[in-house]
Image 1 (cartoon, one colour):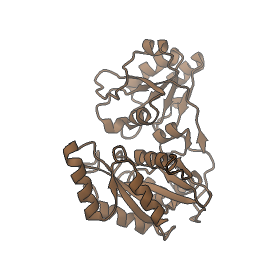
Image 2: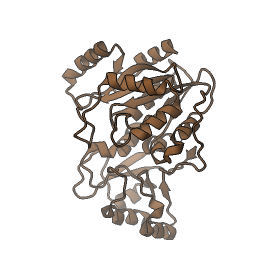
Image 3: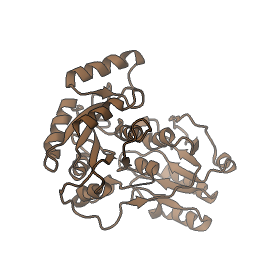
Image 4: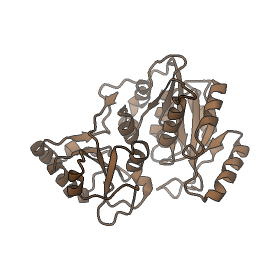
Length: 340
């Protein structure tokens, strides 16, 4: 797997983004590595606030910032022209630039020239390792849980990280590893494979490599990508599911979301539809695949409605439902252990 090294502390660059959905890299780093994130910087028109201090580049230099992390990305993952001036200034001030967008920093002539002059590094996280294999479909030793979704950007990574953290807690002490399959997860974990950048023929093989053979009592908690119902990204989700060969999966959704984010003509699939299709596809490589619960991002509904929403969803589906950022993940872990 790719292992990256990012010098702390970090300045999170949010561009001129106004939708939190497209700032999930910055939000994820602040949530899971808050001690490393010392400030944020925005362009004119940007309204996203991650709750950390706003800084100018000069203030960031004074504060000892070593790396500017690109914390946002639009559909398609390009580097907008309006970012270049600020990124170039940061490089000239000695900061490394770290990005997980599809467009490569190292392919941009002005940024590359500035980095060569200043000695700063351009770190492209979204680069898969070379010579990935084709998937074999052969079941590997150890146990695996995959987070799957009704859509993108609604909690698959957070759910996986929360489950891993609780599995490894002193009260549980279960051998577990978070397996990162996206740019933010890779930045948090320090290693992983950006599945959505892998050539289609090798996606399932990359997923097998991401979660190799392990001890029988070890759990790999695999970060899901996209949704098998997504009109744009289902191919990535399908390959990750086949290659992961999960023993268990958690369906992740967002309370109140009704349509695929950014594709308003497509309604969100139901939880039941996601469970049925995931089992139908996943059972090709692991006949014992099971749903063990439903993770719900309830940040979009009033607190007074949260508990009722969770309880009604659990009653309707018959699975334990939880918001990992509020309820913890003990119920899902108990079900994992009972089912395994």
